[in-house]
Length: 385
Image (tube, rainbow, N blue to C red):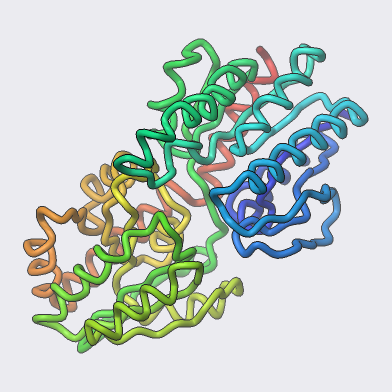
């Protein structure tokens, strides 16, 4: 039997939107599969444990600060342990979800010694490009950041194929290795509604804006507050949060200072509970700092699945989707007041219509059968190379 190793350091949140599907598709394609991940929750900074068939957790050093040598060391230790396990298991196929960029270095080291092994890289983020650095800090850090990026760029070309999570990542990296087969395949999640989805008409006395996910240093909290303030001049608004993070208290303090009502549900992973909260919202906030290089987000996938109207400032992929499908509003500081006015004037029929368009985006671009077809087609190309 053919064997495959899937590598992801972030099992706690990459598994549900990518890895479990890759694992399933490889099993269905006749592979024996092992998933290698770390025993540290990099988002919540706690020890991570999970028990699943095919999953093996590798012990790594813990850390508390995202921008720290301790974090870099933790990722380096994981990558070196991955290399050791690859040498012990000698798989026919490696599917490596990265960054961390050290994974490119050590997985490619195995590929160079074992050229018949097929290697697929999935690029799920751009490190260091997504770091929200500006001004003097960015300038002083430039030499180190170039070295960091070069670890990726010098090694990703050893792959037999590259999957990009969005077109923006492809635009940045594919020019470095244009001959490597590549494809943009978005993240996915199973359809909670099993094909039976409907949006109930309601009298929208309150416009509820959902925020799902981490509230961290790449989120533009000030822009979120300004958007809600601009709309609250005409309509009653409420912020509904499912998530948390190091910047959560700052967001809630700013809400209190601006007299913006909010409900904090914390992290919720149960789909039914999450749906019961989001069904009462009409909008989803997809807002990050301009300095962050990202084209699609996991939270936008949640919003599309629930049929929420996107309030978006993410460029590239998501901006184009909002424009093409008319499923939300692209917003920047220079058009904030204009967009806030448009949102405040929406009636129930218009809200229902836009929500249906948002749900249609999920069905056309992110539904699991669509992703499965794209993945299997690409896998076939890599296997035949």
